[in-house]
Structures are given as structure tokens and as C-alpha cells.
Image (cartoon, rainbow, N blue to C red; front, side, top):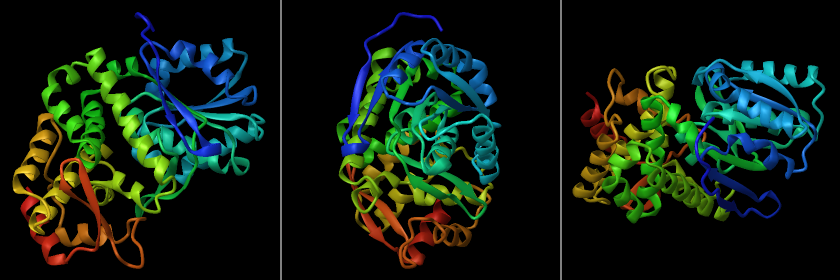
Length: 368
């Protein structure tokens, strides 16, 4: 990895004894071992990654850890959402056990959201919990899934059904890794970033529109602001509601619909951010239909999603199946689905259940 090193930005997630820092910088991956040294973990580390990320950044990460005195064990999982499964978890448990990882040894996730969720699930459950380190290499992981301590694997009936809240000891985000990201994965990450503007910060939402060309070109100042602001917003929400008893549910804006789109297509048609983008449009259209959101702001959300090349509609799915799938979402309480709907850009509210007639109208309109 080459290039000039820039200052490292730090975002603190204040959660009492579970507090940790998010480090954000360019060309900092070679320093990973020095940062891990400060965490006081055991000398053996299992790095969970996939073949693509291992080929790009595995050697840099492993060399840095070894130079800092760590013994590295690799747990490689095939790329793809379908491998965020109990079968993959079982394979990683075997690797950890066979290589003698004890309760002080850390599990380090090197990759995107799938790797982070899976590695975190392993860390939370192996020997009832071992230290966990996030080294996200995709935009979606850097701004969303690596922060906040949600870890899980999928079940055939639903996404992230089997999981826990388990905070990392550190998040270490080198934004230079975004330069090798496929365009589709970059766009998927932008969906979660747009979400932050809608749920929390109208000024940030406007910034995403005004600076979209610089952001798409990964200009250092703009992409650094995007990652840092997104992490700060998520940290503020998580600090107030670590285990999603109330406020944190707003981070699921677009996700209740989006998870249905993912699961009904077997996790093969849409990557997570694409499904969330469609889901945000579904939620905005629902709010407009209920009279709780203006059509102009609904159009602004749809325009922003299109601006970043994300889908805003779905095909080959039936509204009845989508509604049924949402009732299997893990956030259903007492048979009631929780929806996050916008009131204005920058503020959302939780709505418990929505008349099926409204949902049918919205989904029929949104279907291609």
C-alpha cells in the first residue's frame, strides 16, 4: 500500500465499559498492529476474511500484526451474503479450536459487512466471548455495520435472525481500501449514508447532493467527511440506546422493507444497500400515502437514491409476499411490525403496524 499518510480522525463511541474508538484515515492499514497492541489482547489473532479482500489487503494486515508480535491464524470464508451462515460459523469455530485460541485471543474482521457480522458472531459466542476487532474495507461496513455491535448470521427464513449485541474493541477504517471497491459496492454503501441524512441530519443530506461528484470520485476531503459524519451519527444514536430498546430502531429506516426484498430473492438479486435503497423509497412513499410526509420531500429522497445509481423499485415480487416476509422480521413485537417513517428529511418516527391496504397500494406502485 502506497501513498501519503494523512491525519487519523478518531470518533469515540461512549458505552461505559464497552466504549471504543473508531479510527479513520488514509494509508493506515500498515499501522494496524500498533493499534491492536494497545488493546491488551492475547498474542494470537484469528483474521476472518474472504478471498478477494485477502488478496488485496490480507498480506498488509498480517505483516503489520506479525511485526507487532502477534501470531496470526486465517479463517477464510467465500464471498457473499449466503455464506453468513451457521455452516460458516461452524467452520470458523473449528479453525479457532484447532489453533488453540483462548479467551484472550482476538477475532479480527477484515472485509465488508458480511465478514464483520460473521466474525463478530464468532467472537461473541466462542468460549462465551473473546475480543473483537473490526477492520472494515467497504464503504457500507465503514459507515454502518462495523459500528454499534450488532453481529449475526442469517437463517433461511430471515436475515440476521441469529445474533447478539457485541461491541468491538476497536474499529480501524482505512479509506484507501475504498479505491479498490467495485462500483456496485460503493453505491450500496451510499444507501446507508443517505439514510443518516434522512433520519438525523438534513444538512448532511444536502451535502451529499451538493458534493456528489467529489464523493463519487473519492476525493479525500469529501469521502473523509462522509465516513466520519456517518460514524458520528451512528455513535450518537447507539450511545443513547445500545441494545435497540427505542431510539436505535431509527437506524432501521428502509431496512424492514429492504430485508424482505433481500430474503424473498434469496440474497442473490440485491446486495444489502440496494435493498435498503428500495426500502427507503417504500418507507417514504408510505409516509406520503399516510399524509405524514410531503410528496416533495419524498421525491427528494427518490432523486438522491437515483443520483447515486441505486435502485428505487423492485420487480418479480408480489406485495402479499413482501408484507408476509416483514412479519418474520426480527423487529416484530407481539405480532406488530415496526416501521420507521420520515416526518421530514432529518427526522423520522417509529410507527407500529400500517394498514395492509396502504402497503398494497405503495408496493403495487413501486413494482416495475
